[in-house]
Image (cartoon, rainbow, N blue to C red):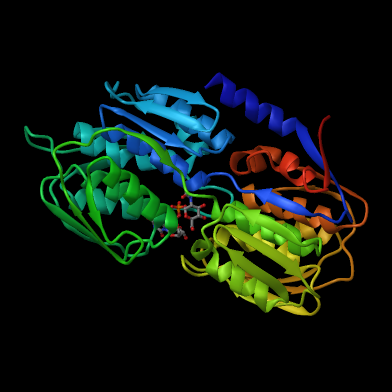
Length: 433
Ligand code: UD1
């Protein structure tokens, strides 16, 4: 836990100096998906045996999840991109509020804890910079599975009544296709007594990745990736070795936009192209040529012209790439309309891009972006994880050296970003002031 706190403190003081105007060339390597890895780690709570994951990215969020799982009694071993998690005995303790609040995905541990132990106490994650982000869907679903849930003093306490302490299969219909609620309930239902269904489930690839891991551990999950997931409960799950985390589609999308904003031909790999269909389509619409060859994408930008996007649940355009795409549109020919439909407060990067000479008008949750001939370097702040990535992209294309602060956000979700960019010709330096 101390290590995580120190890392954040260090990130607070650091900034990236991004020299603009360099041509990039070569291959950008994509790491394992942050959002998958985090939830797969919590799935280890479901088994007394060791769960071994590979292709785990090196991120402060992964360090945070490690600290939370350790606080619950999980033994965690990490060697390079492999992580071994053994939850043979669980302490039954409550993870610290500070950790849960800084890492929303850790709240999802309430599902597997309840499924395995019959009781769980997890602090409410609270709001965050991009929006309120409630967890009502998670709680409603746990109640449908037979849990008694109380929220008091900021802590959610859930327990299964009766001597068997086992959840009961149920039909759950989500009001909105929340990724986290789908994952929480999926993990709770795999050890329940009987069959559960989750209707209006999230379709995101990370949900499919979780279902695949659970099935590898002996669960019986069908339909993940579609709107109806069916889970036949089993008595217990076993461990597994070398389960590879899927490639990070958001990091891959960020890299494609880095190529586009610098007008550089680049290869981005490994990717699962179907995870990026909406992004690839928009990049093609704005004039980039995209070649897909197995798990590699080659992007050759032409004259980048403005296109409109509206963020949507998968398979629509992901909210997590809205800020990077806006940075690209700041340099496009023409005017693009960018509508944020998932989070109520995810346009804070607009003010930062304006500091770099971008021409953007805000109308509620819509940004109208008029492309300019060139952005100009300025000191800017990444106000959240993806906003910080957008600042780096803007810096790659701007005239001069852009100083990006807010690295505590960037380091949560991008594995070694500056080294990866420098390896393809960028000049990005981390400075400690
Ligand atoms: C996950 C991702 C995050 C991504 C988001 C949307 C992880 C760790 N994080 O977050 O990077 O931006 O999906 O793709 O996987 N909502 C409700 N009630 C609820 C739950 C959610 O109204 O009970 C709303 C939220 O306020 C938000 C929308 O649903 O507007 C999407 O949230 P959700 O899918 O739950 O996002 P997360 O799982 O938290």
